[in-house]
Image (tube, rainbow, N blue to C red):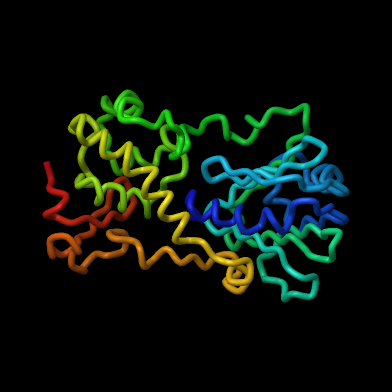
Length: 276
């Protein structure tokens, strides 16, 4: 599933290609991906609209339209967005095509079909999407140690699991929770009730730093993005813990181990992240 850095990469690549472009035709090839309104109304409402900008909230992409309506998208597990020439080979699992006024197309591809679109007009609330349930953005100035502690210190669940709670901090996900906990020296199965004030302080500093680094490392050109069909990201070289089980820790030389925490795999260094 694309996490916040990957979704932000998509936004930064697509926005310059879409701003000022009008939608000439809407093809809904699979109604399943349209969450609101009904597919026929969705297509009719979106047709002839003009893109005025793009935002991101957590893992949601938000397309701003000149009419003050908005198009929301959550990519979920396998969603991909491409701006392509009209004669570009069409991927097998293409479910939505927006024909643009410059002859290009905005295509949505999704193998597992879990992604969802919402068209929200100017009189509707965005809460239809569930976006109102999200917690702070990782880069929000309110994301300080006191905030994290107040939301989590009474939780008997592991800190690894709670970093995935989108109602606390939006967009972290499995890859970056491994990285954050490694950099903070916290064992993934440590209960939130066991964390110290120093731990909360480290987490509040590391969360924005690590996600900002991931966004920087994911940077690529529109041509590179299209060549990778919207699913190739270059974040692997800078990762220090995620996917490194069986490899030596760059700090102490101990071998990374892998455990399962709340159904998700987690890599950690047994020396740098000692069990408490």
